[in-house]
Length: 241
Image 1 (cartoon, one colour):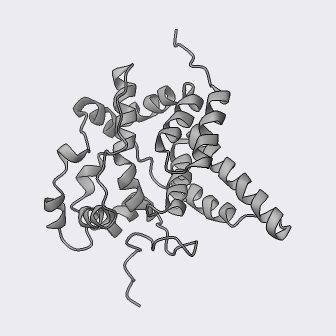
Image 2 (tube, rainbow, N blue to C red):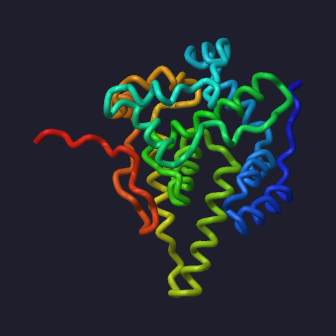
Image 3 (tube, rainbow, N blue to C red):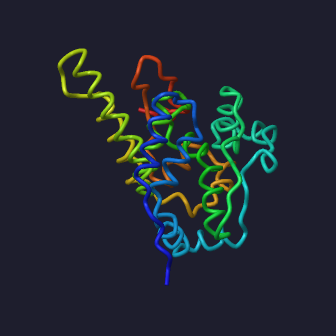
């Protein structure tokens, strides 16, 4: 009999309050997701293992962290390749994959699943075109909800949207937020894309980014949606008239 993991709404709310007070508290994001996870990770694992690529992924268990990435080699890939765009993104953001990794314990398959999803989060940024500014992080969360239906991410997004609506109402007496269409488009892009968690995305790095996006059915963000947002990552190359 499969053990049912309790959803801890009170813990999620406390962690969310800390996150709203200080958006740099990435640990609070993990706490929200874990508090609301319930049995979602196990269901996600079953879905991944129904895919031949997913079964291979869990047999080989590749890692995508600083110890397993040669950034210099990625920078030698052809201009416009997925890997070269990713390397440039890391340099521009002074960022290394895996910085959000943390110790995990429990079922080895679920531990690997959590580690894997954290490590490829940055590749999802590049594929979807959302940068690492606050708007970009919200966009990737919405894209991820479209992919996996993660309850914790959805709770974070709904809370942020509600806060935005309240602020707009106080300042302009308008019960609306520009975040709503922005996040809707990101969620829809995640829903329309191929299911990414089973895929060995490292193997796609030498290929042209536009080609990878077409194969994975990802329509990237084409323009920034807020004055302080960074430009989108590698918008699609212009097509000849």
